[in-house]
Length: 491
Image (cartoon, rainbow, N blue to C red):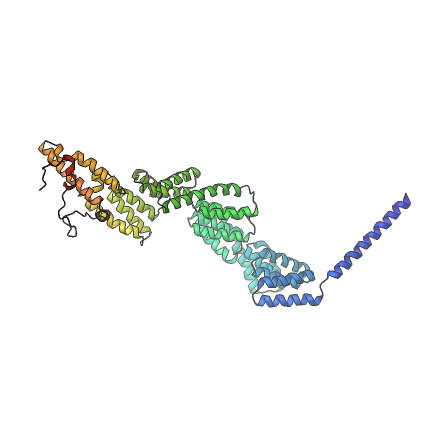
């Protein structure tokens, strides 16, 4: 038994030695000759001078693999990483340089600068202090003093955010980011300050920059997706949340948001398409579904309200149109929505209110052509309201078809024909009414005259020299209702 155990130990020792010899021989066979390493270094330097950073990086990778103990090779590769904006990899290479050669001041200075740009002020100050002890210069001393100022700015900025003093925090964070442009925390904090101050564009830019600093950050993509969604930008939100799901297909927050925003984005697109195709009934249906799909986020609901404001107007449902216009404008003042509401006011003969909305639209966008034309038309219609409103006379909407106009005319003409009244006073009242009904039919069934009327001009106004009314007879087209014996004459 003892013999067997000793033999086994001897055999194991032999196998270990044999394996070690094999590994050494394999390593020696795979070793890159120094001449080849030098060639990679020269090529890396050449490509770096030409600005071809990826090519330079490939050669420095090969040089590092050939000689993993050469601190200068790591330093050169770290320089390329910095040029490519890959700060974490650059830090890793600079750490390796200082492991191999702790007194390499240039590498420590470089690392201190990277730490400073990242907003890692404590390690930056430590490295700058070591450099200052090795090379006493005013420049390094100024960096150390600057770090102390930056630390105070960061502390005060965080405090201002907590106290909701966003303008003060924004000023300090902007100063900090001038020296710490790669700081994820400061970018994210400034994004929050911008959001609270209502500058959503700057907030998104800062958050996107912060997300690039955090490679493969599902949290960053989720924050961007949620921010876009809060702003009513469903399509952009969908794009960002898809990036999150590329990194983690079953992310506990990104996946449910994706399901929701996908549905919302489809409904918004359906609304837009329905408006373009002038399918206003479908537009109303999709917008109502959108309101059910999103009951909280105001800017998504704004999209639905704005569409309802517009599409109810184009189906002559003025009351719900005005209601949705008002609710949309409570969320966001938009010139197009103001003009839609003004159109609704005009349909209700609320001329002052319409003109006020058109003026507000111009205050927001002084070149908004629709508002300029709207003011002119509203003023004409207001002037005309003292005379005759042909739509109101026939009791039809402004978008009534020719057949609807004719039908309304026949019904009212039968009712108000003077032959139906025996009392002289009533007959005179009916004559006036009948004349207005006939004039309304004359205008609203003639495309040119109707177009003039819709622009605020009465084509039958005798005071307008451009109007031609030669031979207009309000009874001409109605004689058939009472036969040829009708003897009524209008003088």
